[in-house]
Image 1 (cartoon, helix red, strand yellow):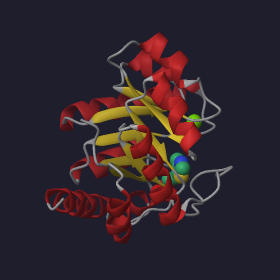
Image 2 (spheres, protein in one colour):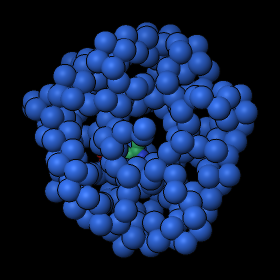
Image 3 (cartoon, protein in one colour):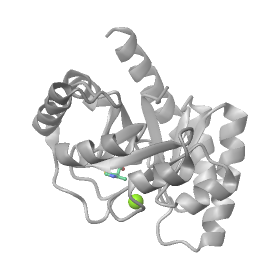
Image 4 (cartoon, rainbow, N blue to C red):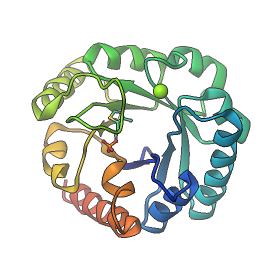
Length: 213
Ligand code: TZP
Ligand code: MG
């Protein structure tokens, strides 16, 4: 099962990515995406190994952003691939049927390509502007989501779609209305004073929202 809440790490002064992951895991997060940008491989590997140990301890999945080789080397659960990364079809061939592969999408056409490649989930965004990601694709907004999700239903594509980009707790109703499977959050948890409490609020809100569906 693809989680309803994907927590994505980012650079926060005074924290390693593993420490950020731990704060969110303690709040009930069960899916962590390690997102390290412009860091030497050795640093990425150390962070990934430390984060994997924590994820195993908490029974959570670990997904590595961008780097297929790193995900394989440390034995992560999956990899998340964007436009600049290994194509998802190639990754599926290399990693086999059991490895979790997520693909980034900004349009329905992106989703069709990832669906044909056999991804397990799609990160669709950005929902709104966010400084977390450089070279951001066009903002989709609630209308964009409704539109793209409608096209997916029409085409019979029912791969879980995870919303991403500047998301907060208050966005949950609009996201549910558009038919997404869940949400990916970075700043709203990582930049909170109390990261564990913020994570726990998302876990509770999503659990309640999906029980009511
Ligand atoms: N891809 C699209 S938006 C985004 C990524 C990685 C950043 C999400 O982070 P935040 O801080 O929740 O906007
Ligand atoms: Mg990438």
